[in-house]
Image (cartoon, rainbow, N blue to C red; front, top):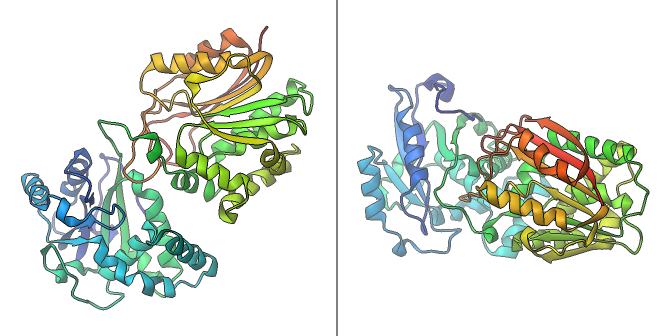
Amino acid sequence: MRNRGMSEEISAAELLESNGILGIEYAHVYTDQQFSKQHRLGIAELHRLPDGVVSSRVVLVDDYSTGVSIDRFDMTAFLLNLQRNDAVPDVVVLESEIAHYCGSVIDSISDSKLKRRIVSYYRTRGRYPCSALVATWYLLRLGAFGNPIIPCIYGRSDKLYSDALLTILPDCFVTSEVDALNIIAQTDYSSMTRRIEHIYFEHQEDVHSDWDDFDAEEYVARNYGRSLLAEDRQIIEFVISALQEMTIEPVSTKIVADIGVGPNLYPALLASPLIPHDGTIELIDIAERNLAYLRAVIEGENNDHSAVWEGFEEYIRSLGYPADLGTVRRSASVRKGNIYELEPNRYDMVMSFFVGESITDRVSEFDRATTTLMASVKPNGLFVIAHMIGSRGYFAGSDTFFPAVGLTMDQIRQKYEEYGECRYRMIPRGGNVSARKGYKGMAVVVGQKKC
């Protein structure tokens, strides 16, 4: 799989093993959308491809996951915009037509755990996950099911079939695309993964998504679910070291909060040895899907979700620090709230990871969030804070875009030094290229609030 910026070149030789037909997909659109900035950015990548490649241009219209029928989508206007941008496709297909073939792909999956997860998703929600649809879409176009005649809303279905595939997408689709390739790798068609390439461009929007569009499961899968990232390891190690240097007494923080917790439980794991048996950790977030995810983990309703945080617990304990997911589950209170409405002088300890800079694109709002956050900490209380450095925004699920303030390390030091003695660490950016737009690293602050 490729990720590339606008300055890099791509050659046909990298995309085709022989002189065959390259199926190029671009301008992916949902039936509840219109032609947008994302489509123009994708078309710009299309026009940067080298000349001389025999190709077929393909557009997929998603009428499956949106629940919005094609009758309510202005296809004429969409095609006119493609024409104006010199990007008329050879064929346009509805995603609902692809769903008919998903069963065959699922039957072919050799990994029983993966198969059960997809089947469970379908039984619970009545539709296939995006990853299964994408895998089916790619296998169909590569001829895994022969060359059936697929109903098209534009062009001819024979234009669907190619020797290799190139998909041009915003980077907010990377999780489902990686999962789709993993599905194909576990089927009888595993060798076809070598014939699939991607170009991801930076997802940009002029408006920000609603918080209830925040996709907790996609966010966890991308940032925590596949492996423990180097940045998170370093954050964990620094926080443990700082707390140990401060000689904090065990079970000394009766009321703890993780503010803007998101679907991230490793800060709570770091706090767990400091929480007494009758203590509480309030897990506070504004997004309903984050709260639902947290409740599912706390109540043990989903083994796959729990396994992610059991892995973090195991790693933290391997450092000699007695993190305990059981303590988190016993003491957790999951509730809706936001950083601007915290009760002053309530908490013995506050955690807040990637929040103040990730809810707004205005420095003034970051300042206000920090003020209310720190006001909620009791005198002599602990605070453990992490911020992205240089972030310009981020996604949490396909077709989402959330704001961020591009902070510097100096700004962070100046912000927290007034509250007490602090320990700081700048964690350099690692290899997770899809984590955040423009971010240069992560700043961690551990301190004790002065009286």
